[in-house]
Image 1 (cartoon, rainbow, N blue to C red):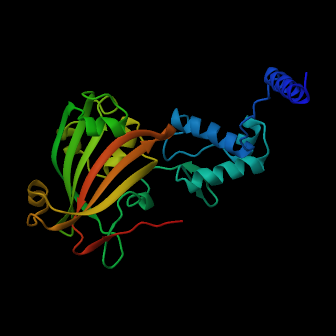
Image 2: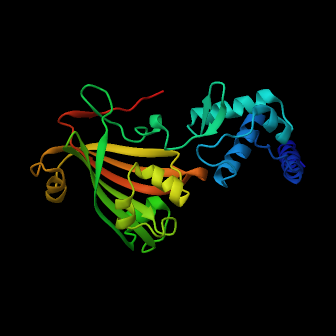
Image 3: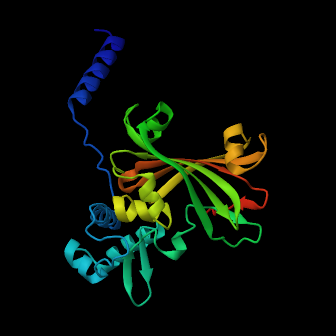
Length: 263
């Protein structure tokens, strides 16, 4: 065997030997506080602690999960930053709720020129069950033609119509939601969804663009067709990053602006 053949044979042998050795899998590392955060989130998701209720103290949770109080404190800090928990000085930590006054405008970012949120009036136009169109089923992770609930409404600020909303909800989560039930309720929709249907919106993703008002939308908003509007397409999620709402909103921004805080 010549030198070149011997070298190739040796290299082949080394490759075969390497192929027979199983390399250890790299474990996915998760910091301990993240693991505790996940356990607390699971308890929130199954309703062990209801919105507005206090959760056990840091000492109790540390005992329960067999970790240090500092680890629990760090997990709670992350959950508070994500608006899932609320710390109240001298009172403890509570499950966040849409009923909180400071949560009223968390998902409504339209502000008047003065920069102070206005109290708005919601006027219901429609609430009905139908089969999900493809463009709605996809973001809700439903099959086309599965049942959904469609709500149409306008929002008025100081008597001026500023928003027209189309709100799409999974029909299986919102059984019994009717126009009559909505009309009898006075308050933010997210509070109703949370308290009566057990569905809490914890985060949302939005796409925003400017467009000219189509005829139907213009009629709802009391503006001329072609009037410049802000279009906001939102998908809202509950625990487990599960989509539970698609919202299409058209905003008149003549006397308002859309505020988004980045951090």
